[in-house]
Length: 173
Image (tube, rainbow, N blue to C red; front, side, top):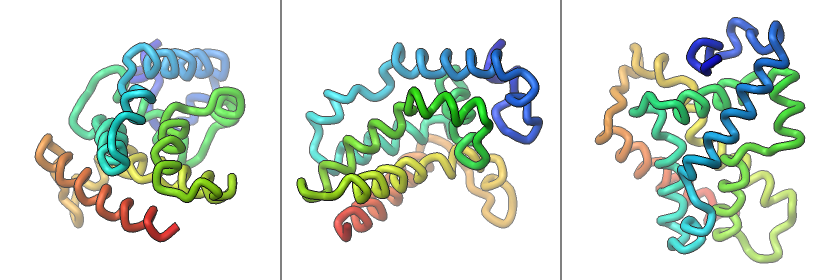
């Protein structure tokens, strides 16, 4: 079953009716993220901290303009961040999503080396949520009163804006 057919929002609570199948969708999503190597950790480490931040944001905002398999899976993860199903909660307890692991790599480059684990976790969760909001709520944000249009140019402007805000936020930690 594809992510599109199973629904990408918790509204229908599909995961509670078919937990075994939904767990398989989450496994397929994780596999797709790894196989498509949409953001390589070593490549990220080779970039300047500012460029790594921009690349991270751009990659996780791509579902705004792309309608491929990985983008559908990212939308599922974005919706699950609002009201996680039991299946999703159990799944991420054992397999933290790549978005969190990569966010940690990015924020560590801005934080002092002696930053506490708690500070790193706070910063990582904060950064990971920046693109999730826009991916999850893109349809609502396209309607009044916001009337945002998400195309390639808008994606670049959004990355620029979020990167600027994030750089100022991370500098203050």
